[in-house]
Length: 413
Image 1 (cartoon, one colour):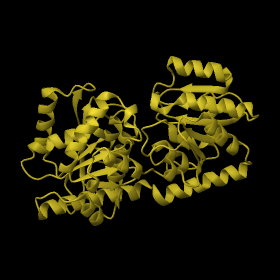
Image 2 (tube, helix red, strand yellow):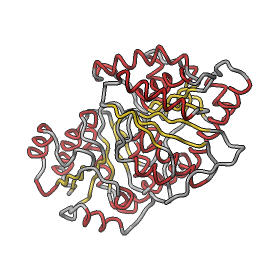
Image 3 (cartoon, helix red, strand yellow):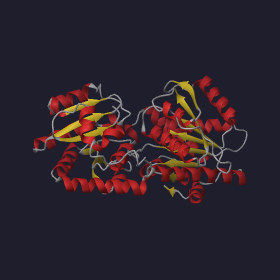
Image 4 (spheres, one colour):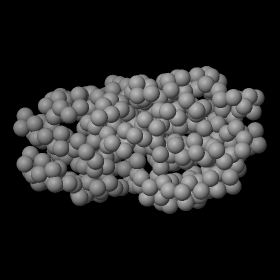
């Protein structure tokens, strides 16, 4: 077990992270990674995590770091007066120096929590979602976006992991002067190329056949558009490429009826492997031949792209959020909802020889090392927090995100 936090006195004080949940998801994974790397480096603000919903999959990892973890015990979509009072009581007890929200509900809760502080506490939001077409979102989500836009002028900064998402949120009323860009980060010692992973993957997940394995790691949700990838794989197989499909993620062991029908209609049973939520992805991800992501909307910076690139796996993804910028020379980008284009991209990569595919994977690994090392990303957060606290100490008025970003050495979105 990692020893509890014991940060030097010169470091910033306590950061109260307010997250919607601690279930499997990109935002939750990033929060946990930040706390883990800060614990290891001992150069950190002391963290405390408050989850609106009951503790999920990531809670044990937080406890291993010694990070205090609290919950409001909410069920989705029902804040209620009791949960609000509990939020204010926990915040009053912690007396944070920074309130850091994660995801829309967590962001709003962080702003509410600031009301009890009795002093100026910087409030930072963290947005991890893209909005190319808000009409595809549920009505309740659109109402949440509208409320968040109105309140966005009152916060000290809005961290986006995607420049595209920052522009899309500005278009619906989020204050663009508050935008700060900090991309996702990854543990490059844990996610790395591993020639032995191919056999390990096939044994762990009982993958049949010797064909080229295309994997997608994503929860079972309409925005991920798994059926599009199924049709794309069918096209590539019809063109003579022996591709096998691996779908992994929460709910993927129990796909909905539409996806089951698409699989049955398009692919032979032995060409598809389904698996539910797993926590051992780093052990077998390097064993994929290709990583595909078929999302139709909503992605800002998909973690799985960065993880696959760090493992040297060539990627094909739809042009949603910052996926094109993330991949760079590490793979190919296709339009969303376009099975023909996805199939053609898979064919193009499948037709390459092993050395050519390895070169693409190596380019992805190099890009991850240059831009997405979790240690570098943690430094950006730490500097941002230190800058926000210093400015609050000097002046009770909210600092602009542009000033915070400049002082902290992080990017304007």
